[in-house]
Each structure stands twice: as C-alpha cells, then as structure tokens.
Amino acid sequence: MREDLNRMTPMPGKPRISVVFPAFNEEMNLETVITSACRILPDLTSSFEIIIVNDGSTDGTAGVCARLSDSEWPIQIVTHPHNLGYGAALKSGIEQAKKDLIFFCDSDGQFSLSDLPRLLGWVDQYDIVAGYREQRQDPPHRRLNAWGWNLLVRSIFGLRIRDIDCAFKIFRREVFEAVEIGTVGAFVNTEILIRALEHGFTVKEVPVRHFPRRFGTQTGANPRVIIKAFYELAKVYLRITFGTPRPVSSPVKHEVA
Image 1: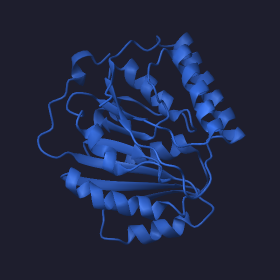
Image 2: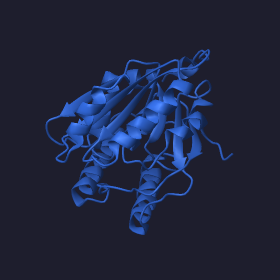
Image 3: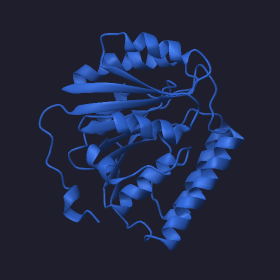
Image 4: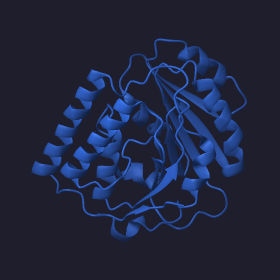
C-alpha cells in the first residue's frame, strides 16, 4: 500500500503532459482529432507530446500517421504490425510516455480535448482524474451493454466508478510506475483502476461531453472483443480471489459541476 506516498507535491504552473491516442481503423477521424489536440494543448501545458498507437489498422490509418509524424508538432507513432487489442495499444503508448502526466483518449472523435481543463483542475489533489460521459451518445444497445458491464464489475470487484470504460482519463505518471497493465483487450480500463486502488491511489470523477461517432465502426460490441473482456475479467478475479486481497476502499469523488 502506498499510504502517504500518493500525496504528491502540487505541480507549479502548467503541467507537462503525454497524450496517448490508440487507433484502429480511424482513417476518417484521426487527423481531425490530432489537429484539434495540437491546437488546444499548447494553451494548457508547458510541454506536451502526442503518442499515436496504430494497432494494426487495415485501412488508411498508417498513411494518416505518416503525414502527422512529418508535421511540426511533437508526434510519435507506435505501430503494431497486427491488431493486438485496445489494452495492448494503451500499454504501448503509456510505455513511451515521458511527461509528468499521462492522458489517454480515443481517436474516434467522440471526445473533445477542450474538456481536458475539467480534469486538470484536480491533478494536484488526486492521482487519477477520470471523465464520465454526461450524456453518452451511442446507440441504445451500446448503452445497455455498458450499463450491464458497469454493474457486473462493480458487484464483483467493489469498484465504485460510474463510467469505467470512459476513455478520457489523466494519471500522474507514478500510477503507471506502480501499476502494470496485464490485459490486452477492452477490460484494460477496469484492470488499471482495480490495480490503482490496490496500491492506494486516489480517483476523482468529473463529467465530460460525448459526441456521436461520425465515421468508422465501433468495435466494442464485437463478439470477439466481448469474449476477450470476460476472459480477462475472470483472470483478474481469480488473481484477486486466490492471490492478493480485494481492492481497498480508496476515495473516489464525483464532481458534478
């Protein structure tokens, strides 16, 4: 347990941020998302880097990445030769991150980095600041699946997070120095939070906007993705049940303003 170690010294001035964007077949969304990020981040940070992880895309995502890497912005491309999964993409990006804060966001255009200040306002007080979607703009079956998944992981792991899979989170880098990502699929958000709470890190939740996907296809409802998520859930459950203790009740706060 980290106990008092998670009471970090407040960050003076603007923070240094690594931004990780996992991307799988996001040819039509990626350039718009990254261009927007590059416009917003200089006003929020003293130094930033953008890490795009092309997770074995089969469309034109690689070409978009090549164009972006030639720009004046601090953009790094990590390429998986084959699709390894959302968790594997996040892990690859986080391993390349060099700044004090690590933020990750989907590259599908359903979030806006203009909401990042909502999270940054709490990084001096919490180790993790997690967004939750005020009004989730997904089809009804996706919202129903998400509701059932949240209910399941809350009941199994005692994880009191209102929007576990919201891909709009910022972490002090000390979190990932202590937490090792083991899952490769969609269970990764749950695993990170479980392991973080086991180490005594604190979490703050704040609302963020969510927008309809304009281009491309969501993969979260793919049967293979769902099966892998349940498999990884079972592995973590067995580790907790027969290995280390269940997560302690670490402070999780909600900001509704």
